[in-house]
Amino acid sequence: MKSIKAIIKINPDTLHEKEVLKIIQLRLMDVSSSTREATLDLLWQSLTQLDYEEEEKTQNFQASFIKKYLSVIVERADDTSLGVRKLVVKLLSHILQNSSAN
Image 1 (tube, rainbow, N blue to C red):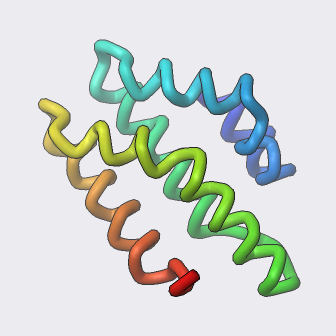
Image 2: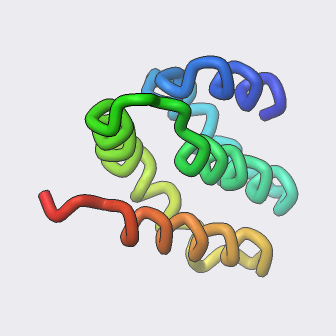
Image 3: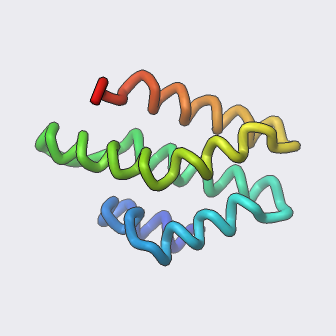
């Protein structure tokens, strides 16, 4: 996850590639709760630390992010780890507060 985090920090659009989506989905199903937390933290940082200067590009990124990752985030809402559930609530809250009414 560390290497993916570094790549995404340089180019957030990497999150929208199929291979990255598969890796994130797999890591969210990992046996280790710390791996699941780290993966959700990666998604949280990617969503909240967008470095786009244009608001339209930011909105497009968020819309695409929601389309691809919302279902995998929601699946973790009943996780056995409290830390994972807290991150899910944090992510969903941010998504709801910042999504447009489209």
